[in-house]
Image 1 (tube, rainbow, N blue to C red):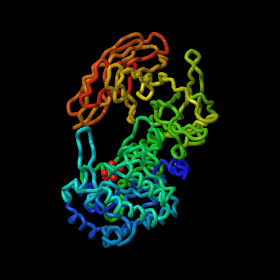
Image 2: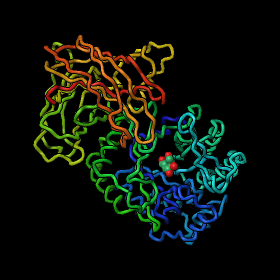
Image 3: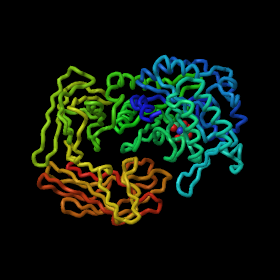
Image 4: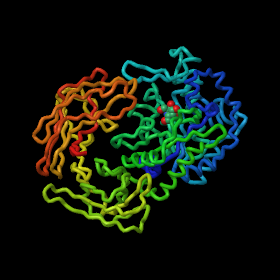
Length: 571
Ligand code: FHN
């Protein structure tokens, strides 16, 4: 089947529910409890005898997802603990044969999803498993550092493990069951590929394709581009700084854990955080897969339900600005929020409500503007063209209404699909932010590897011959401070510091040292490095050139630059 056709429903959806549920929920310590507490298989198996989720209701779960605005559900059919949450002939360690509950929740969910028009998808851990003696899970964490995430307490001899046996005797027969017994499945969501070889993963992919050609497969089936998956799963909870090179999705926790957790350090996210995460992701063209971890009785925790209710209320009004949209056509994010678009509509997601917002570089004519929250409210706007520098500016006066507490969406109807001039222009805040994404990279070293990474940083910058530059327009003369924003490492991560940089800007040369600000950082908040003050006497088109005079690369991190910022001296 044509992959574009296969992906159409998923692209349209933008928002799904992830569910981590298994017998581990009985212990209230997350889905990794078996590994963290090194529980022997024979003891862990006893948990199944206690699993009796009498309050489980497929209809209720599907209703919660649907009311939140979610269009698909990805549920753990088998996580790393090896317990199957569906009826399987491969092992009696499953919800039907191994628990007092004895019901196949996947069969019930499949019916409920079908009734409500929600796509049912299965998470499946195909390499990492702590019960099967042949499952292998050794990861290369950093060059020279390996982590064993398999069961090394019951099955100590790694050399006797043979992943192929596990794939052939366990994984493939189970995938056959999952793709035969529960109707059409939206995605098989593979996880933790570890050391699976591309040809082994491709066989798994082919099995899925043969059984259900319309079913999607995520990239965690194997970390190798030769394998024929449909879309990229980003890192857990990863919100990138730039759009990925193909369709992508971020799996996100709603609290500190995936599986049910009653520990005191478990914290829920706030409504503003999850709503803006969804918007941030949609504005970069991705899908948001938000997780909940039901309790052992089968109930989605109240805190999660309350958050999803708020999300649903927001989606009811603003869903148009999310479903079926594409990422922002502007390379630079506006200072007041985010942008998505579809057809002839630009959706301006306003995070910071203010009297007036501006948008630079839109070449289309705006026909009308309206708020999704208050469609009848008259919105005044003005489009002008700057004669001197030739850029367009759209100014929108925001009415004096009570804005949405999380994100207010304004729709600008334009004459066709967006046509954008990406030139960087000083915006109303006065700040000129020159992001990595819009830098020109000058690779002048023979060994150059410098690139823009997914997090939106200039990275793999190891050689002083390489340099970067930006062109931009200053509209307001005045004094400005020049800062570099540089990525830093947190906690145990070994990072490289002590680089030296030179910035050529407005016919001046500024130098600065990029050094650790505090020892033992607990967050990865970027370093803000002051490079000097400059003064613009007139509005002008200028160029900033950044060279590295010295780069330390002992920990293979090098210099990782997020942006160069020109900030009014009085800010
Ligand atoms: O180890 C798992 C984890 O428990 C959880 O299932 C997440 C969800 O993306 N995936 C793995 C770690 O990446």
